[in-house]
Image (cartoon, rainbow, N blue to C red; front, top):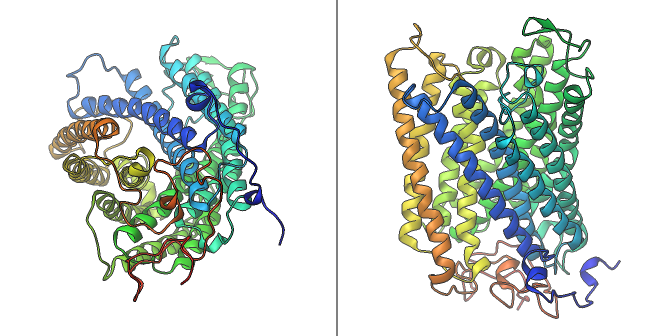
Length: 572
């Protein structure tokens, strides 16, 4: 049998200084926390921007400091930060970094220095993005999709420095992701410990692994689109810019294709939905299995569903472009492929439900968030079937129906999983437990609140209320109930916004004052809970790597003394 990186038992180079241990750290666990703290910090900026948008929509004219150009900037920055800089960075950079080496039995990532570098390049991309708030004209107001030609023409907020910094930040982010993604893929393929076959890996690792491969294939499309638009903006090229009049004057551009940008953007943009979703799918599988004390139903089917979803996600991008003027035959193809990708996704949902069936369900906070994800994801997926159909999508396009659907499936669902995952692995990361009462309150206010926010948006969309509008005014086809719904949505958003303070207080307070955690408080079978130290030290496993004898889901095995058997427990 060929030797692998896992067989290399040479001692690690341990940092000697505080800066080497916590700042320029090459330990995957420290890097994961750096990713997580940075992603959550920039995510809070996006949350505040959404709060400002809701104030304007719920109570138009009451806040004179929010002007139309500001509103468009809030929309643009909120969307891009949440999708790329929070969700992608947190699920892959944060959880991917922390979990992969521990779950596959490795000492660290295969390329620790490159891993460290990926975080600092990511931080640079965040700094460049934030800088756009402080340049003349402010950040871009072109919408989070950054469509040309309006993104770089006069009259659009931030068309000078804002769009330049946004595009530069995206290019830098993609460089950071590429370094991280290559690490995740190589570590899974080359650094698994003895006995850890691919089909013994937890679903969390499978989700992050496939999402990393997808990112390595999809992000280059966004990278070249960002560089080409930068050249259109700075160097006067015409990749995306057609001949047009701007502010009454002809521009210097001619011959470009705005539709080309849409294809490049959505060739990245739709796989990006699953780059975020697949790690969440994997994590929620593990949460449900552990807290239902039952092996995951149809493990191999779940793994293949992740792989198939990843492959099919590259064939559906143009369902975002039904109103762009594409050939109707293409619309038929992309509508069909959109419905086909629902099949492996539905398989996963059925398997989660069958895992819960007759399980010994413990309704602890991580499990509550996992169940909350099932509700929001199923609802978001059902509305996605509406938007995948051309004839239904055309009248609903650019209405609040799209906002409600997108946030349920792409915003709320993965964030519920992130909360559940943080609560689940917090004892392993910190060695301490959190406050149960605060955590329960955080869940219930958040879960009920997001339904109060996003369900009424579907009603607004069916009425035809357009999204991205600063003010609706006295529009004839919009009844008073729509304005009332907007007010109620804003009130619910305030409650959910305030409830997040419970989470942050709980997490920070518990680091210092929380009770000491048991090394394996949930009775989990997967490898990360079997480390000799809690929290794990640099190198994870001490002088000897574990040997794996079984899969990660041996729960409630008849005749066994405990209700779980750890992966590294030898057969008796």
